[in-house]
Image 1 (cartoon, one colour):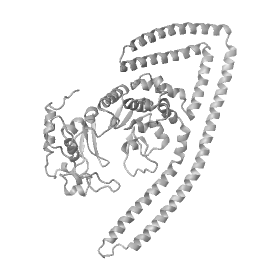
Image 2 (cartoon, one colour):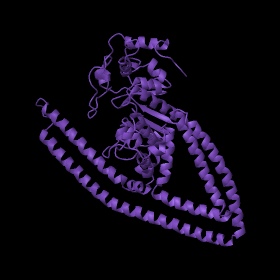
Image 3 (cartoon, helix red, strand yellow):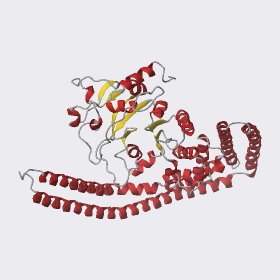
Image 4 (cartoon, one colour):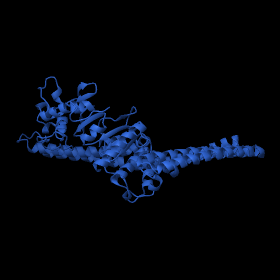
Length: 505
Protein backbone atom coordinates (compact mmCIF):
# COMPACT_ATOMS: atom_id res chain seq x y z
CA UNK A 1 0.00 0.00 0.00
CA UNK A 2 2.82 2.40 0.89
CA UNK A 3 4.73 1.79 -2.34
CA UNK A 4 1.57 2.03 -4.45
CA UNK A 5 0.76 5.35 -2.79
CA UNK A 6 4.25 6.60 -3.68
CA UNK A 7 3.67 5.54 -7.30
CA UNK A 8 0.14 6.97 -7.41
CA UNK A 9 -1.36 3.60 -8.41
CA UNK A 10 -3.74 2.95 -5.53
CA UNK A 11 -7.10 1.50 -6.53
CA UNK A 12 -9.74 3.91 -7.80
CA UNK A 13 -11.77 3.87 -4.57
CA UNK A 14 -8.78 4.61 -2.32
CA UNK A 15 -8.87 7.78 -0.22
CA UNK A 16 -5.85 9.08 1.71
CA UNK A 17 -7.13 10.49 5.00
CA UNK A 18 -3.93 11.73 6.55
CA UNK A 19 -0.14 11.87 6.20
CA UNK A 20 2.14 12.99 3.40
CA UNK A 21 4.73 11.63 0.93
CA UNK A 22 7.34 14.31 0.30
CA UNK A 23 9.38 13.95 -2.88
CA UNK A 24 11.41 16.84 -4.32
CA UNK A 25 9.64 19.29 -1.98
CA UNK A 26 6.13 18.31 -3.09
CA UNK A 27 3.51 16.13 -1.41
CA UNK A 28 2.65 13.21 -3.71
CA UNK A 29 -0.69 12.71 -1.94
CA UNK A 30 -1.84 16.12 -3.17
CA UNK A 31 -0.86 16.02 -6.85
CA UNK A 32 -3.11 14.94 -9.72
CA UNK A 33 -2.67 12.29 -12.41
CA UNK A 34 -1.08 14.60 -14.97
CA UNK A 35 1.65 15.54 -12.51
CA UNK A 36 2.13 11.85 -11.65
CA UNK A 37 2.79 11.17 -15.35
CA UNK A 38 5.87 13.39 -15.04
CA UNK A 39 7.00 11.47 -11.94
CA UNK A 40 5.93 7.86 -12.47
CA UNK A 41 8.57 6.14 -14.57
CA UNK A 42 10.55 9.30 -15.29
CA UNK A 43 11.37 9.96 -11.62
CA UNK A 44 10.22 6.84 -9.75
CA UNK A 45 10.17 3.29 -11.15
CA UNK A 46 8.90 0.07 -9.58
CA UNK A 47 9.67 -3.67 -9.84
CA UNK A 48 6.94 -6.03 -8.62
CA UNK A 49 7.30 -9.37 -6.83
CA UNK A 50 6.25 -11.84 -9.54
CA UNK A 51 7.42 -10.92 -13.05
CA UNK A 52 4.48 -12.75 -14.62
CA UNK A 53 2.05 -10.53 -12.71
CA UNK A 54 3.61 -7.61 -14.60
CA UNK A 55 4.03 -9.26 -18.01
CA UNK A 56 1.30 -10.16 -20.49
CA UNK A 57 1.88 -13.79 -21.60
CA UNK A 58 0.45 -13.21 -25.10
CA UNK A 59 2.24 -9.93 -25.90
CA UNK A 60 5.74 -9.67 -27.33
CA UNK A 61 8.42 -8.48 -24.90
CA UNK A 62 9.35 -5.51 -27.09
CA UNK A 63 5.84 -4.13 -27.01
CA UNK A 64 5.62 -4.57 -23.23
CA UNK A 65 8.84 -2.63 -22.66
CA UNK A 66 7.90 0.18 -25.04
CA UNK A 67 4.22 0.60 -24.14
CA UNK A 68 4.99 2.50 -20.93
CA UNK A 69 7.05 5.07 -22.82
CA UNK A 70 4.38 5.41 -25.50
CA UNK A 71 1.47 5.62 -23.04
CA UNK A 72 3.25 8.18 -20.87
CA UNK A 73 3.49 10.35 -23.96
CA UNK A 74 -0.28 10.66 -24.25
CA UNK A 75 -0.46 14.00 -22.51
CA UNK A 76 -3.96 14.84 -23.71
CA UNK A 77 -5.40 11.89 -21.77
CA UNK A 78 -3.60 13.08 -18.62
CA UNK A 79 -4.95 16.58 -19.17
CA UNK A 80 -8.51 15.22 -19.30
CA UNK A 81 -8.06 13.31 -16.02
CA UNK A 82 -6.69 16.42 -14.33
CA UNK A 83 -9.75 18.44 -15.30
CA UNK A 84 -12.19 15.93 -13.74
CA UNK A 85 -10.02 14.98 -10.74
CA UNK A 86 -11.81 17.18 -8.16
CA UNK A 87 -15.28 15.89 -9.06
CA UNK A 88 -14.16 12.25 -8.96
CA UNK A 89 -12.50 12.78 -5.58
CA UNK A 90 -15.70 14.33 -4.17
CA UNK A 91 -17.65 11.16 -4.98
CA UNK A 92 -15.06 8.93 -3.31
CA UNK A 93 -15.07 11.06 -0.16
CA UNK A 94 -18.86 10.82 0.15
CA UNK A 95 -18.76 7.05 -0.37
CA UNK A 96 -16.20 6.77 2.38
CA UNK A 97 -18.34 8.91 4.70
CA UNK A 98 -21.28 6.56 4.03
CA UNK A 99 -19.16 3.52 4.89
CA UNK A 100 -17.90 5.12 8.11
CA UNK A 101 -21.45 6.09 9.10
CA UNK A 102 -22.63 2.49 8.65
CA UNK A 103 -19.77 1.18 10.75
CA UNK A 104 -20.42 3.71 13.54
CA UNK A 105 -24.12 2.85 13.54
CA UNK A 106 -23.31 -0.85 14.09
CA UNK A 107 -21.06 0.06 17.01
CA UNK A 108 -23.72 2.33 18.58
CA UNK A 109 -26.41 -0.34 18.24
CA UNK A 110 -24.13 -2.95 19.80
CA UNK A 111 -23.43 -0.61 22.71
CA UNK A 112 -27.15 0.13 23.15
CA UNK A 113 -27.94 -3.60 23.39
CA UNK A 114 -25.34 -4.09 26.14
CA UNK A 115 -26.32 -1.00 28.13
CA UNK A 116 -27.82 -3.08 30.99
CA UNK A 117 -31.18 -1.37 30.76
CA UNK A 118 -29.94 2.18 31.41
CA UNK A 119 -31.31 3.24 28.05
CA UNK A 120 -28.77 6.04 27.63
CA UNK A 121 -28.78 5.05 23.95
CA UNK A 122 -32.18 4.62 22.29
CA UNK A 123 -31.98 2.13 19.37
CA UNK A 124 -34.99 3.70 17.65
CA UNK A 125 -33.50 7.20 17.79
CA UNK A 126 -30.16 5.86 16.59
CA UNK A 127 -31.91 4.24 13.62
CA UNK A 128 -33.80 7.41 12.72
CA UNK A 129 -30.62 9.49 12.92
CA UNK A 130 -28.73 6.94 10.82
CA UNK A 131 -31.45 6.92 8.14
CA UNK A 132 -31.51 10.71 7.99
CA UNK A 133 -27.72 11.05 7.68
CA UNK A 134 -27.61 8.23 5.12
CA UNK A 135 -30.21 9.98 2.98
CA UNK A 136 -28.24 13.25 3.16
CA UNK A 137 -25.01 11.56 2.02
CA UNK A 138 -26.76 9.71 -0.83
CA UNK A 139 -28.16 13.03 -2.01
CA UNK A 140 -24.66 14.49 -1.99
CA UNK A 141 -23.36 11.48 -3.97
CA UNK A 142 -26.12 11.94 -6.55
CA UNK A 143 -25.28 15.64 -6.89
CA UNK A 144 -21.55 14.87 -7.14
CA UNK A 145 -22.18 12.32 -9.92
CA UNK A 146 -24.21 14.86 -11.85
CA UNK A 147 -21.41 17.40 -11.41
CA UNK A 148 -18.89 14.82 -12.69
CA UNK A 149 -21.03 14.11 -15.74
CA UNK A 150 -21.16 17.81 -16.61
CA UNK A 151 -17.43 18.23 -15.93
CA UNK A 152 -16.56 15.30 -18.23
CA UNK A 153 -18.46 16.92 -21.08
CA UNK A 154 -16.73 20.24 -20.42
CA UNK A 155 -13.30 18.56 -20.09
CA UNK A 156 -13.65 16.73 -23.42
CA UNK A 157 -14.46 20.00 -25.15
CA UNK A 158 -11.50 21.77 -23.51
CA UNK A 159 -9.00 19.02 -24.45
CA UNK A 160 -10.29 18.88 -28.03
CA UNK A 161 -10.01 22.65 -28.40
CA UNK A 162 -6.51 22.73 -26.86
CA UNK A 163 -5.34 20.06 -29.32
CA UNK A 164 -6.80 21.91 -32.30
CA UNK A 165 -5.27 25.21 -31.15
CA UNK A 166 -1.85 23.63 -30.67
CA UNK A 167 -2.03 21.88 -34.04
CA UNK A 168 -3.03 25.12 -35.78
CA UNK A 169 -0.29 27.13 -34.05
CA UNK A 170 2.49 24.69 -34.93
CA UNK A 171 1.09 24.27 -38.46
CA UNK A 172 1.34 28.02 -39.10
CA UNK A 173 4.92 28.07 -37.82
CA UNK A 174 5.87 25.14 -40.09
CA UNK A 175 4.35 26.83 -43.15
CA UNK A 176 6.27 30.04 -42.41
CA UNK A 177 9.53 28.08 -42.14
CA UNK A 178 8.82 26.27 -45.42
CA UNK A 179 8.43 29.61 -47.19
CA UNK A 180 11.80 30.75 -45.80
CA UNK A 181 13.40 27.44 -46.83
CA UNK A 182 12.09 27.86 -50.40
CA UNK A 183 13.54 31.34 -50.57
CA UNK A 184 16.92 30.10 -49.24
CA UNK A 185 16.99 27.31 -51.83
CA UNK A 186 16.35 29.75 -54.66
CA UNK A 187 19.13 32.06 -53.49
CA UNK A 188 21.70 29.28 -53.14
CA UNK A 189 23.93 28.66 -56.19
CA UNK A 190 24.51 25.25 -57.74
CA UNK A 191 28.27 25.58 -57.17
CA UNK A 192 27.79 26.17 -53.43
CA UNK A 193 25.60 23.08 -53.09
CA UNK A 194 28.19 20.99 -55.00
CA UNK A 195 30.93 22.18 -52.64
CA UNK A 196 28.91 21.28 -49.52
CA UNK A 197 28.06 17.82 -50.87
CA UNK A 198 31.65 16.91 -51.80
CA UNK A 199 32.97 17.94 -48.39
CA UNK A 200 30.22 16.06 -46.56
CA UNK A 201 30.81 12.87 -48.59
CA UNK A 202 34.55 12.85 -47.88
CA UNK A 203 33.95 13.20 -44.14
CA UNK A 204 31.25 10.50 -44.27
CA UNK A 205 33.52 7.96 -46.02
CA UNK A 206 36.27 8.49 -43.47
CA UNK A 207 33.99 8.02 -40.45
CA UNK A 208 32.22 4.99 -42.02
CA UNK A 209 35.55 3.18 -42.52
CA UNK A 210 36.51 3.92 -38.91
CA UNK A 211 33.15 2.59 -37.63
CA UNK A 212 33.40 -0.64 -39.64
CA UNK A 213 36.86 -1.33 -38.28
CA UNK A 214 35.90 -0.76 -34.63
CA UNK A 215 32.68 -2.82 -34.88
CA UNK A 216 34.52 -5.70 -36.55
CA UNK A 217 37.06 -5.78 -33.69
CA UNK A 218 34.32 -5.76 -31.02
CA UNK A 219 32.45 -8.60 -32.75
CA UNK A 220 35.62 -10.70 -32.70
CA UNK A 221 35.89 -10.14 -28.94
CA UNK A 222 32.26 -11.17 -28.43
CA UNK A 223 32.92 -14.67 -29.83
CA UNK A 224 35.03 -15.66 -26.81
CA UNK A 225 33.46 -13.44 -24.13
CA UNK A 226 31.09 -14.50 -21.31
CA UNK A 227 27.45 -13.35 -21.33
CA UNK A 228 28.01 -10.27 -19.15
CA UNK A 229 30.99 -9.10 -21.20
CA UNK A 230 29.04 -9.76 -24.40
CA UNK A 231 26.29 -7.45 -23.19
CA UNK A 232 28.84 -4.71 -22.52
CA UNK A 233 30.49 -5.21 -25.91
CA UNK A 234 27.10 -5.13 -27.59
CA UNK A 235 26.33 -1.88 -25.82
CA UNK A 236 29.60 -0.39 -27.12
CA UNK A 237 28.60 -1.36 -30.65
CA UNK A 238 25.20 0.26 -30.16
CA UNK A 239 26.85 3.43 -28.88
CA UNK A 240 29.21 3.57 -31.87
CA UNK A 241 26.32 3.09 -34.29
CA UNK A 242 24.22 5.72 -32.51
CA UNK A 243 27.11 8.19 -32.67
CA UNK A 244 27.57 7.46 -36.36
CA UNK A 245 23.84 7.89 -37.03
CA UNK A 246 24.01 11.35 -35.44
CA UNK A 247 27.13 12.17 -37.51
CA UNK A 248 25.38 10.97 -40.68
CA UNK A 249 22.43 13.22 -39.97
CA UNK A 250 24.73 16.20 -39.52
CA UNK A 251 26.53 15.43 -42.80
CA UNK A 252 23.22 15.24 -44.62
CA UNK A 253 22.27 18.61 -43.22
CA UNK A 254 25.62 20.07 -44.31
CA UNK A 255 24.92 18.97 -47.89
CA UNK A 256 21.91 21.29 -47.96
CA UNK A 257 23.91 24.39 -47.17
CA UNK A 258 24.07 26.38 -43.96
CA UNK A 259 20.92 28.47 -44.13
CA UNK A 260 18.73 25.80 -45.62
CA UNK A 261 20.14 23.24 -43.16
CA UNK A 262 19.08 25.39 -40.21
CA UNK A 263 15.58 25.87 -41.60
CA UNK A 264 15.20 22.14 -42.27
CA UNK A 265 16.24 21.43 -38.71
CA UNK A 266 13.70 23.93 -37.33
CA UNK A 267 10.91 22.39 -39.42
CA UNK A 268 11.72 18.88 -38.14
CA UNK A 269 11.84 20.14 -34.58
CA UNK A 270 8.36 21.61 -34.96
CA UNK A 271 7.04 18.24 -36.29
CA UNK A 272 8.49 16.40 -33.26
CA UNK A 273 7.02 18.99 -31.02
CA UNK A 274 3.58 18.32 -32.50
CA UNK A 275 3.86 14.56 -31.94
CA UNK A 276 4.99 15.06 -28.34
CA UNK A 277 1.78 16.94 -27.59
CA UNK A 278 -0.10 13.73 -28.28
CA UNK A 279 2.36 10.81 -28.08
CA UNK A 280 5.92 9.46 -28.04
CA UNK A 281 6.99 7.85 -31.34
CA UNK A 282 7.28 4.07 -31.60
CA UNK A 283 10.78 4.26 -33.04
CA UNK A 284 12.08 6.31 -30.11
CA UNK A 285 10.58 3.82 -27.65
CA UNK A 286 12.08 0.77 -29.43
CA UNK A 287 15.59 2.27 -29.54
CA UNK A 288 15.48 2.97 -25.81
CA UNK A 289 14.11 -0.53 -25.05
CA UNK A 290 17.00 -2.26 -26.89
CA UNK A 291 19.50 -0.08 -25.05
CA UNK A 292 18.08 -0.92 -21.60
CA UNK A 293 17.80 -4.67 -22.35
CA UNK A 294 21.54 -4.64 -22.98
CA UNK A 295 22.13 -2.85 -19.68
CA UNK A 296 20.31 -5.52 -17.65
CA UNK A 297 22.29 -8.33 -19.29
CA UNK A 298 19.79 -9.74 -21.79
CA UNK A 299 21.73 -11.17 -24.77
CA UNK A 300 20.69 -10.38 -28.35
CA UNK A 301 18.13 -7.74 -27.32
CA UNK A 302 17.00 -6.99 -30.88
CA UNK A 303 16.07 -10.66 -31.35
CA UNK A 304 14.54 -10.94 -27.86
CA UNK A 305 12.26 -7.96 -28.57
CA UNK A 306 10.09 -10.23 -30.74
CA UNK A 307 9.83 -13.09 -28.22
CA UNK A 308 7.14 -13.85 -25.63
CA UNK A 309 7.50 -14.17 -21.82
CA UNK A 310 7.26 -17.99 -21.89
CA UNK A 311 10.47 -18.06 -23.95
CA UNK A 312 12.41 -16.52 -21.02
CA UNK A 313 13.56 -18.13 -17.76
CA UNK A 314 12.34 -16.75 -14.41
CA UNK A 315 15.52 -14.75 -13.93
CA UNK A 316 15.34 -13.33 -17.46
CA UNK A 317 11.69 -12.38 -16.97
CA UNK A 318 12.65 -10.45 -13.86
CA UNK A 319 15.39 -8.71 -15.89
CA UNK A 320 12.68 -7.72 -18.39
CA UNK A 321 10.62 -6.19 -15.57
CA UNK A 322 13.72 -4.30 -14.39
CA UNK A 323 14.26 -3.10 -17.97
CA UNK A 324 10.68 -1.79 -18.06
CA UNK A 325 11.34 0.17 -14.86
CA UNK A 326 14.62 1.60 -16.20
CA UNK A 327 13.39 2.77 -19.62
CA UNK A 328 12.80 6.31 -18.36
CA UNK A 329 16.00 6.59 -16.23
CA UNK A 330 14.24 7.02 -12.85
CA UNK A 331 15.98 8.57 -9.84
CA UNK A 332 14.23 6.23 -7.39
CA UNK A 333 13.56 2.50 -7.89
CA UNK A 334 11.06 0.65 -5.67
CA UNK A 335 11.70 -3.12 -5.53
CA UNK A 336 8.76 -5.08 -4.05
CA UNK A 337 10.29 -8.46 -3.14
CA UNK A 338 11.68 -8.92 -6.67
CA UNK A 339 13.56 -12.15 -5.85
CA UNK A 340 10.99 -14.07 -3.79
CA UNK A 341 9.85 -16.29 -6.69
CA UNK A 342 13.41 -17.15 -7.82
CA UNK A 343 15.85 -19.85 -6.74
CA UNK A 344 18.85 -18.79 -4.66
CA UNK A 345 21.34 -18.74 -7.56
CA UNK A 346 19.17 -16.50 -9.75
CA UNK A 347 18.22 -14.45 -6.68
CA UNK A 348 21.89 -13.65 -6.13
CA UNK A 349 22.31 -12.59 -9.77
CA UNK A 350 19.29 -10.25 -9.64
CA UNK A 351 20.46 -8.69 -6.37
CA UNK A 352 23.92 -8.09 -7.81
CA UNK A 353 22.33 -6.61 -10.95
CA UNK A 354 20.27 -4.17 -8.89
CA UNK A 355 23.35 -3.16 -6.87
CA UNK A 356 25.33 -2.59 -10.09
CA UNK A 357 22.52 -0.57 -11.66
CA UNK A 358 22.26 1.48 -8.47
CA UNK A 359 25.88 2.53 -8.83
CA UNK A 360 25.84 2.99 -12.62
CA UNK A 361 22.63 5.05 -12.72
CA UNK A 362 23.08 6.80 -9.35
CA UNK A 363 19.78 5.28 -8.18
CA UNK A 364 18.18 5.39 -4.78
CA UNK A 365 16.48 2.04 -4.07
CA UNK A 366 13.59 1.21 -1.73
CA UNK A 367 13.79 -2.56 -1.22
CA UNK A 368 10.72 -4.25 0.30
CA UNK A 369 11.38 -7.76 1.66
CA UNK A 370 10.74 -10.22 4.48
CA UNK A 371 14.13 -11.85 3.95
CA UNK A 372 16.59 -10.54 6.53
CA UNK A 373 19.47 -12.04 4.53
CA UNK A 374 18.52 -9.82 1.59
CA UNK A 375 18.24 -6.85 3.96
CA UNK A 376 21.74 -7.51 5.27
CA UNK A 377 23.08 -7.68 1.71
CA UNK A 378 21.28 -4.67 0.22
CA UNK A 379 20.39 -2.03 2.79
CA UNK A 380 22.18 1.07 4.04
CA UNK A 381 19.18 2.21 6.10
CA UNK A 382 16.39 -0.07 7.34
CA UNK A 383 12.79 0.67 8.30
CA UNK A 384 11.01 -2.11 10.22
CA UNK A 385 7.23 -1.97 9.68
CA UNK A 386 4.35 -3.56 11.59
CA UNK A 387 0.64 -3.12 10.90
CA UNK A 388 1.29 -0.43 8.31
CA UNK A 389 3.54 1.73 10.50
CA UNK A 390 7.30 2.08 10.87
CA UNK A 391 8.20 0.88 14.37
CA UNK A 392 11.99 1.24 14.11
CA UNK A 393 14.32 2.95 11.65
CA UNK A 394 18.08 3.21 11.55
CA UNK A 395 21.26 2.27 9.75
CA UNK A 396 22.24 -1.32 9.00
CA UNK A 397 24.39 -1.39 12.17
CA UNK A 398 21.61 0.09 14.33
CA UNK A 399 19.03 -2.54 13.39
CA UNK A 400 21.24 -5.63 13.35
CA UNK A 401 23.54 -4.81 16.27
CA UNK A 402 21.47 -2.51 18.52
CA UNK A 403 17.72 -3.19 17.94
CA UNK A 404 15.30 -1.52 20.37
CA UNK A 405 11.72 -2.46 19.43
CA UNK A 406 10.24 -5.80 20.66
CA UNK A 407 9.05 -6.60 17.12
CA UNK A 408 12.59 -6.15 15.75
CA UNK A 409 13.85 -8.43 18.53
CA UNK A 410 11.29 -11.06 17.57
CA UNK A 411 12.17 -10.87 13.87
CA UNK A 412 15.89 -11.23 14.42
CA UNK A 413 15.41 -14.06 16.96
CA UNK A 414 13.09 -16.10 14.72
CA UNK A 415 15.59 -16.59 11.86
CA UNK A 416 18.14 -19.43 12.07
CA UNK A 417 21.87 -18.75 11.75
CA UNK A 418 24.87 -21.01 11.35
CA UNK A 419 25.13 -21.60 15.13
CA UNK A 420 21.41 -22.16 15.88
CA UNK A 421 20.93 -25.12 18.23
CA UNK A 422 18.07 -24.16 20.56
CA UNK A 423 14.43 -23.79 19.53
CA UNK A 424 13.89 -20.56 17.59
CA UNK A 425 11.58 -17.85 18.92
CA UNK A 426 8.10 -17.68 17.43
CA UNK A 427 5.87 -14.63 17.46
CA UNK A 428 2.58 -15.63 19.14
CA UNK A 429 -0.85 -14.62 17.87
CA UNK A 430 -1.73 -13.05 14.53
CA UNK A 431 -1.47 -9.55 13.04
CA UNK A 432 -4.38 -7.21 13.86
CA UNK A 433 -7.34 -6.66 11.55
CA UNK A 434 -6.50 -3.32 9.95
CA UNK A 435 -10.13 -2.68 9.02
CA UNK A 436 -10.45 -1.96 12.75
CA UNK A 437 -6.98 -0.75 13.82
CA UNK A 438 -6.09 -1.41 17.47
CA UNK A 439 -5.57 1.34 19.98
CA UNK A 440 -2.08 1.94 21.24
CA UNK A 441 0.86 -0.12 20.03
CA UNK A 442 -0.37 -2.55 17.34
CA UNK A 443 2.23 -5.13 18.45
CA UNK A 444 1.15 -5.08 22.11
CA UNK A 445 -1.17 -8.11 21.85
CA UNK A 446 1.75 -10.27 20.68
CA UNK A 447 4.49 -8.82 22.88
CA UNK A 448 5.60 -10.30 26.20
CA UNK A 449 7.00 -6.85 27.08
CA UNK A 450 3.68 -4.98 26.68
CA UNK A 451 2.64 -2.58 29.45
CA UNK A 452 -0.78 -1.09 30.21
CA UNK A 453 0.00 2.08 28.23
CA UNK A 454 0.75 -0.02 25.13
CA UNK A 455 -2.96 -0.92 24.92
CA UNK A 456 -4.11 2.67 25.40
CA UNK A 457 -1.81 5.03 23.56
CA UNK A 458 0.32 4.72 20.45
CA UNK A 459 4.00 5.28 21.29
CA UNK A 460 5.86 8.17 19.64
CA UNK A 461 9.30 7.80 18.10
CA UNK A 462 12.04 7.87 20.75
CA UNK A 463 15.46 9.05 19.62
CA UNK A 464 18.34 6.66 20.26
CA UNK A 465 20.89 8.41 18.00
CA UNK A 466 20.62 11.00 15.25
CA UNK A 467 19.84 8.21 12.74
CA UNK A 468 18.17 5.63 14.98
CA UNK A 469 14.55 5.90 16.23
CA UNK A 470 12.07 3.39 17.65
CA UNK A 471 8.38 3.67 18.56
CA UNK A 472 8.26 1.75 21.86
CA UNK A 473 7.14 2.79 25.34
CA UNK A 474 10.04 0.70 26.68
CA UNK A 475 12.28 3.61 25.71
CA UNK A 476 10.41 6.07 27.94
CA UNK A 477 12.47 7.27 30.89
CA UNK A 478 9.91 5.89 33.37
CA UNK A 479 9.60 2.45 31.72
CA UNK A 480 10.99 -0.64 33.47
CA UNK A 481 14.36 -1.80 32.20
CA UNK A 482 14.13 -4.98 30.11
CA UNK A 483 16.70 -6.91 28.14
CA UNK A 484 16.40 -8.29 24.62
CA UNK A 485 16.01 -12.10 24.31
CA UNK A 486 19.05 -14.16 25.31
CA UNK A 487 19.21 -15.84 21.90
CA UNK A 488 19.51 -12.42 20.24
CA UNK A 489 22.13 -11.24 22.72
CA UNK A 490 24.29 -14.25 21.87
CA UNK A 491 23.73 -13.77 18.15
CA UNK A 492 24.79 -10.11 18.26
CA UNK A 493 27.83 -11.02 20.32
CA UNK A 494 28.84 -13.58 17.70
CA UNK A 495 28.30 -11.12 14.85
CA UNK A 496 30.29 -8.34 16.46
CA UNK A 497 33.16 -10.73 17.15
CA UNK A 498 33.25 -11.64 13.45
CA UNK A 499 32.28 -15.28 14.08
CA UNK A 500 29.03 -15.24 12.17
CA UNK A 501 29.53 -12.65 9.44
CA UNK A 502 32.38 -11.20 7.44
CA UNK A 503 32.12 -7.44 7.43
CA UNK A 504 33.22 -5.71 4.24
CA UNK A 505 33.30 -2.08 3.10
